[in-house]
Length: 180
Image (tube, rainbow, N blue to C red; front, top):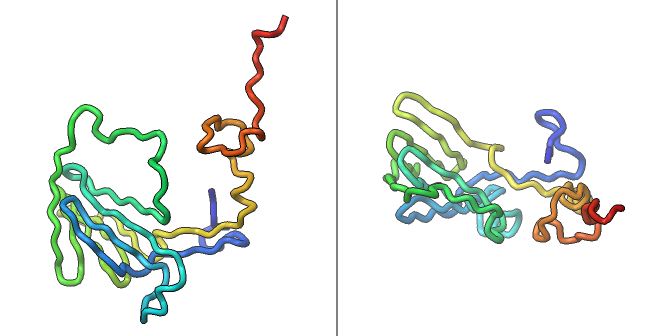
């Protein structure tokens, strides 16, 4: 779904909430879990408004760094395709803190995470590969009339009841075996 009109204009009714500041960073064996606020936090009253992004930066295997962004965690995604169906992953992750940056390294790949302003920079030994900074990660509030008749509800292509709660909108496929 497109939320913008051109490069910088948003469509009418769309409200963006961009990840601005990592307010909580926790570390485990495979990576970092970040709570990223969508508004600047200057005092505790600022924590009352705006959604929070949950960002997971981890390394499932050597030379791979994954980023998973969620606003509301829900059911497992379908289809659930295994990342390593035949072989178990071989984790190769090193977590450190360099100054105020959190660093995750896997093989020759490195990601540096800054808290304020929130950004993730992916680097190889030779150069910066990519950068996700302000206005790169967001959750969008869209008008409800855009989602009530989305493609899964009106196109009859989705026959999965979990993706199409109102199955009465789509008639059953035509059975040609009953024709004489």
